[in-house]
Amino acid sequence: MAEKKERPIKVVAENRKARFNFAIEDTLEAGIALTGTEVKSIRNGKSTIAESYADPKDGEIWLINANIPEYLQANRFNHEPKRP
Image (cartoon, rainbow, N blue to C red):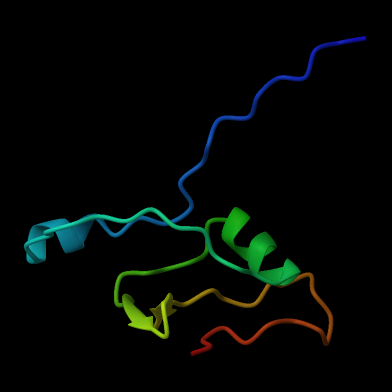
């Protein structure tokens, strides 16, 4: 049986301009809960986080103002491009 190759971790969105415009005191790496069409749209490289920010609420951190465009091959069950 063939060995499975490990897939390298792929960064899907990074705001490099934020490090230039702001003084970053601390960094945090976190996961994100996505729907199926959001995952497919991000894999196509269509997401933008240039104007988004993280907001702590009730012990959780929420990503605000991120834009994940609709997946073009999806049907009526597509996600909203901007959600709170």
